[in-house]
Image 1 (spheres, one colour):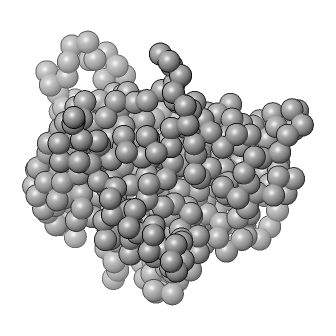
Image 2 (cartoon, one colour):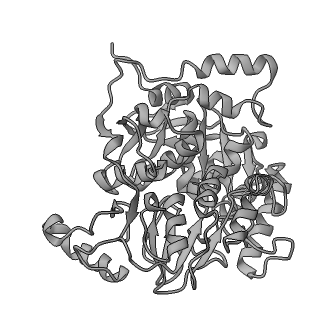
Image 3 (cartoon, rainbow, N blue to C red):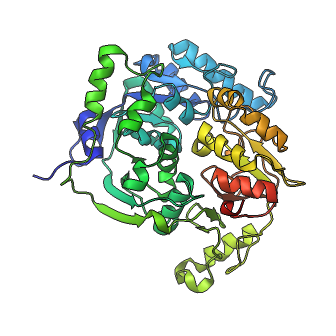
Length: 465
């Protein structure tokens, strides 16, 4: 009998019931909630006259709608203020832990989960947000769910889910200078396309993956859904255990020792069978940049936009439409193209490691003239650490401002919008038409590449700084 994958081990431990020729009923350890996808779910509970079944397993924070300046003032936008106020009321009525606006633990939901020890290896974790896959970096099954499913988990602590197929992506070797976790995952998506992982849960493995910090692993798992996967995960190791140790919601004392003993067993068996396997060499990856309107449209920063001959005939029409939106043409060089906006932040790259990389790259330099830059920490804890480490001083000296935590310009759902026609180098996860504001043009990159572009005003290889 073949061994089990890490995914199958965790799934089997949480499977309450299997419906014949149907989905599994899966127990959920952690339910994360924010202000956008939860109001209807809470309203559904209220209409049925029931409360949250296990409030101690649910954690809430507003992040999508909140402003990233003047957070001490009432939220100016009426709809945003209403959504945040509604979340507060729903959490009060249901005894759900809330890290509200201004709370020292407030921040982007996928940043505060790990930094407070809410996220732990071997768990099942859901949230009404597609980038819940981030938490898979700890060796957990984490995925986004819809509003009706949010209600299902709130009321039962379970969810009905079809069991996905499994995929393994091995990246071996050493990443070269200037190449980050963000470049690694953009490279993989450019090779497999935005549909390459559809129907699969992906385990990322190999020496290049395990050399990454926990922040880097979170970036990789965060972007796994951008290739269509249900989620991504990485087997926990000593780095994982060290990261979780001592955090507020992590096990303590004897319980910690028991938990660690379990976590060390969370690996795919050597003879485990995956439905699909891909292998990549880390040495082939250079700093990446996207040029189109989906995360799969990316190239190495020194490379050209693909010509029509390099694109499948069936995709050429949509390819040209995408380039027309971006104001680019097939075969053009990416280096030297104009940049108007820089956004560093989001659940992909709003952690302390990301702010460190950006700050150290711009140290002693100056922000390009006429360029707008939003440097947004993923949480108040990240913000406090950036200040304590002197990163804020470095940024201000170079002409940048450290804003307050929130999802910010990752998506056009708050005040931080990129104007129509402007080119934004963003460390976030999506570059769809209008993602950062109606008519805005987004180029996805790492914090290092964003820093190089920020001081030159054009697309620049960070290795040349």
